[in-house]
Length: 379
Image 1 (cartoon, rainbow, N blue to C red):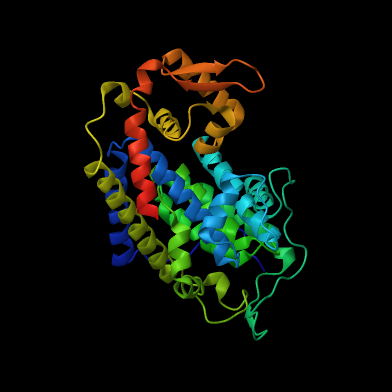
Image 2: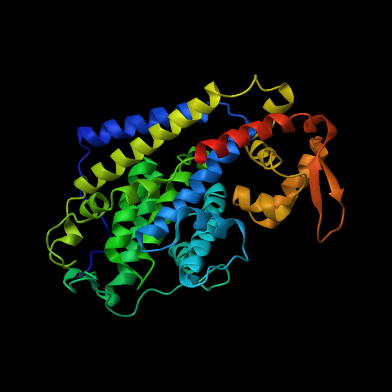
């Protein structure tokens, strides 16, 4: 029998409280650390590539980091013998951009959003929202065939998912810190295992969505997935909060404190790493930014960084970089033309492109130098 409302059991231990305080401290410092536009663009691009690569790697994707990055950059690239891997990476990339867009718009976490997200992960941008599984989906050891976990029966999945979404909405209204909500939703989603495949990837994207929406996006500079992947035994051990493999024999009412300790401690380490990276960019930065650059808002600074490696940009590139729809990107570009830092270079409606105004072209040398430095550090 499924309870009408999910009420997760956990205790705010000193470890969790300390982690939350570290997260808040790092968040405040990163949010108030001015960075050169190209440095912001590099940090964000690197984090996205790592998020996509490592989240798919956790599920067995065979592409290397460099291959995954190439697939994200070139929508037409194919790798012989790795068609499924390429599709997984490309789908996760598109899903991550959509998650960032939803968070920017403050979309509510609903079952419809979850179904749309899973469809993006499993099928692609044009897929219809995925219905929940209609049968059992036992998780077994791929080598021995031993049963690892038996999730709830299909008939119980709709009620469990409705209960999870209702809890998340109430937790947000009551002011529960977003990192706690993200961790608990991550856990409960993979515990319910509402789909035959793609549950782990979708759970990690849901955690990212909740963090970004709740103000813990750190400007897109972090990849929590990378830290899970670097300690997979620890990740899976933390998710196994009850020794019994059957959902109905302990998992449904398990104490989630150990999982939250893992999740919050890991997130605190991730945020601290971002703080150090941002601080390094500031210390190693070039001369103090001119007033022309300082007056640009956050999104404008991100787009300015795109010009470090190209003469012109177009709406699709801006949409991908900011995680927005092309329509919203076109509106922003039009506003920036009026602001005077962009000019239209190709007025064609179908292929309109933009370049920096004469005043802002003088800063290209500084932007390029920062990008070259980032590339050297990556090699």
